[in-house]
Image 1 (cartoon, helix red, strand yellow):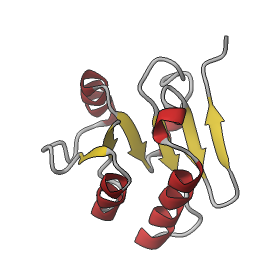
Image 2 (cartoon, rainbow, N blue to C red):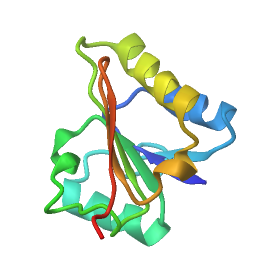
Image 3 (cartoon, one colour):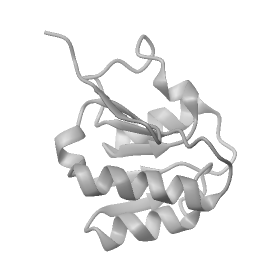
Image 4 (cartoon, rainbow, N blue to C red):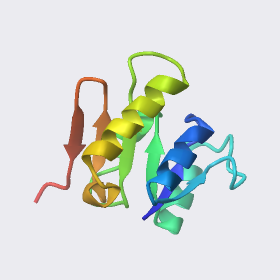
Length: 120
């Protein structure tokens, strides 16, 4: 599965995804650092990649409706820093294959992983 890691996440997130068998690419590595959400989103959609981010703007279900994209994983740790973000990502990867989350908007916090899918 093809994954795009947003610039607000550490480069270790890319490595963790790659170690788990994903074709992960970072926004920075692809020269997209500093892009606004809309152009970045358009590029992610063109590449048909699952987006992993900490940008809560991508949780707006009206703008990024489940079922209209390859998938979004929003990591929302309670603490700042690399470790809390990576711990959340590991928790998601321990509980789900990203293919199971395809097309959904998933929000991971230390308390829960919420998966929002397209409504029938």
